[in-house]
Image 1 (cartoon, helix red, strand yellow):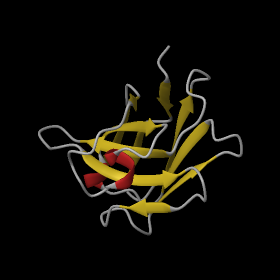
Image 2 (cartoon, one colour):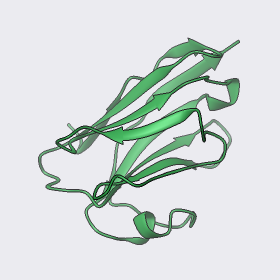
Image 3 (tube, one colour):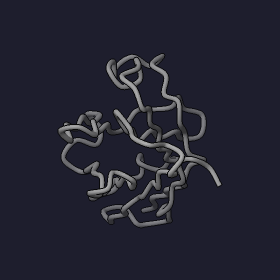
Image 4 (cartoon, helix red, strand yellow):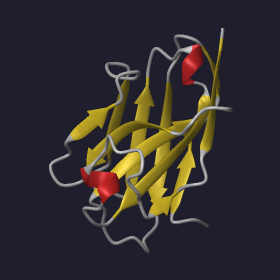
Length: 129
């Protein structure tokens, strides 16, 4: 079992909704930030949404702003991505990632080279017309 485990991916029609979850292992005592990424076939990985555990500040990619919502449960051990008004172009493998510390992957969210320590295996989201 990995330290981050995603679930909730599915096939859905355009306009529908899905909620992804990411369970955080007890071996990770705390997180500074948690992030949802996605990668579609033949495309580069894209950062979708970020949440900072202290204060719950959130950031979103322009492509999902207003449609997706990132959140954590009260224990900070489960990360969610509520996806509404899904579009064909949202089809991708979705990954959650995290770090305990204020590394570049947390503090420089627009830097594609920013690294995060913990990654899940991904969950597939397929949107059809």
